[in-house]
Length: 184
Length: 303
Image (cartoon, rainbow over all chains, first blue to last red):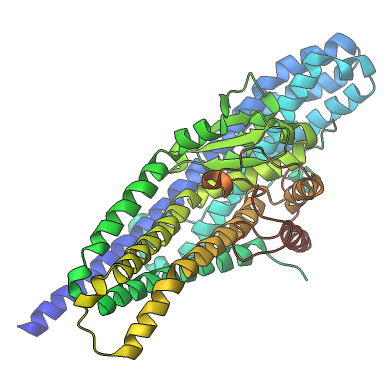
């Protein structure tokens, strides 16, 4: 009798433990999805800032057309990117192009002093920071999930939870890993 | 020597649990002391003390966002009022994976900031007008990260638990002492004088010990918030520079009410010399620790 009760208790505890491990994997997987969605939200916000920024700079430096073109092109590439490496590549390209645009702005003191430009610059650097932080959050979530997938005992539940190892978000050019420094 | 923020976080979390455990031991000790001094008939003290202490602390915990806002006269703002500050808080929320809190400004020339609220969904973080004036973007980001770390680590809850236990101890000890003085002791059935002396000593020392433990927990939560801030921004430099500015600044926020003192990033009450009752670790030690974190860990992710 007591042996039977003991067995039932052990089985129930084992099942609860299994459920907890399964849920941990599912949660880690959801965190990765959320992290990637956050990156996309922030990239979209940066993309939305661009027309305004380009127009403001154009008002002072109309002849720097190649810089504007690079920005517009990079922005267009980002709009069609879907997979993690594609989005990361487009992100790096746009960061590079924006760096060029800000470098152009450096040469125009009137532009640099304008209220509109200063406000845009603050929004841009805040968005760059958010992009950097959402990458960091995403990569941390991927690291957590990928570690769980190969660790004992969670690895035994990988099939049941149908999760798989995910890709890190890596910006192609090493120099792009940090957001451009926007001086005030 | 380089220190990693993860090791700092783990060590402070561990010490918090240890200190809370010690507080519960002190609580059990004092209940035993009261019981052995006055016998079982005095047990009504315990539920009464639990009731009083729970009601006081938990109403202020539950309403902490609106209470602290009212006590400090902080004004809640949005993006229009202070775009840069609002952006900085949004950035830190993205890094922390936490919902956006209410952001508030306190009219006060002394640079300082605080966070409160019962959970991340009801969090408020506030900055004084003084801190906005003296700090640059990187420093404010460090401060915002420290405050969001308090939110993420549920420090309002941790301190409410600590305050409840300390309050409980004080009430039981106080009632015990009154009964002892005003003659409740004559009903005592204890026949062991040594146990009586030990019980009396516990009665006197336990509330003091509880206060020390509470202050100690508060200091651990501050160190933890510093380390968690580094986890969010991966940039110890911003917070370190912010603390240096706070250390160099002599002014103190005008609100010196003890009930909100522990929430500020720089304590308005702690004296210049180190004391066991301080709610914050000495600012020089916090700066030194952040410097060590600058020597470790990955490169800053932003700024």
